[in-house]
Length: 261
Image 1 (cartoon, rainbow, N blue to C red):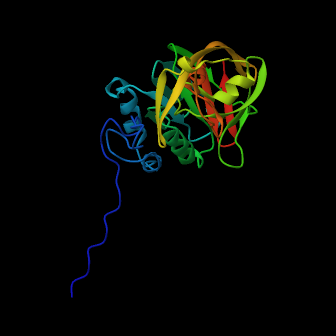
Image 2 (image 1 turned 180 degrees about the vertical axis):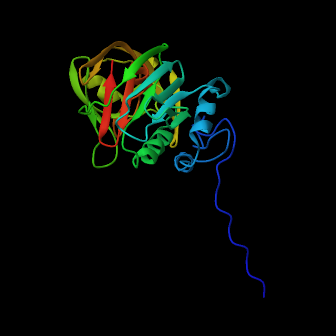
Image 3 (image 1 turned 135 degrees about the vertical axis):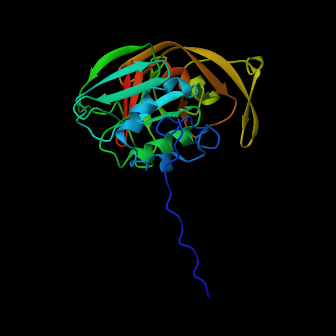
């Protein structure tokens, strides 16, 4: 009787996508190595030299916004931000910290990424903006949007001067409201305004595209915010990327979000 061979332990794959990953918004898998964010987050055995080599070839990675997870909180580091890239270099240790690149269209991917980093002492940061260099310091900030017991981020927003509780959803391309929400805000729509069609799990839904005069969350105000009004009830109004994408940055932490206008 022969013994079954012992299972081989998992090992990192030597490819440019390790530590700089483009994740498919539909499947949640890295397009380079076809691993999940949780699996990628365990690749702590990578050498400092390998991390530095990856950082020097960021142009090889595909487009997408950046989610960076720092392994420690006391950075003492300088960083460089550029459109669709984020590099964190720790001066004292001379190493590049852990980094993930992903497509923000999927709220599931965002939630998985946050869960992956919960074991890290530090923060997640989403960034997409003009290139600039700055000195990073570890500063404790109260979250602008707290994480509720249900695991979701609920924002106490002000829309058209009126209060509204909204679910933060990076998977929604635009702010999305129900027709009842719009009526409470004083937005009057006629049947012919619903000339858009949304494909949902329950079928196609007519929608109207509008421009909100003002939307603010935690003191960050945006004007002329694109929104969709759907002609049916919704469990919650969605704070989508037509607002979030105009922020200079936002940090996602296990206890909440910090918005930066």
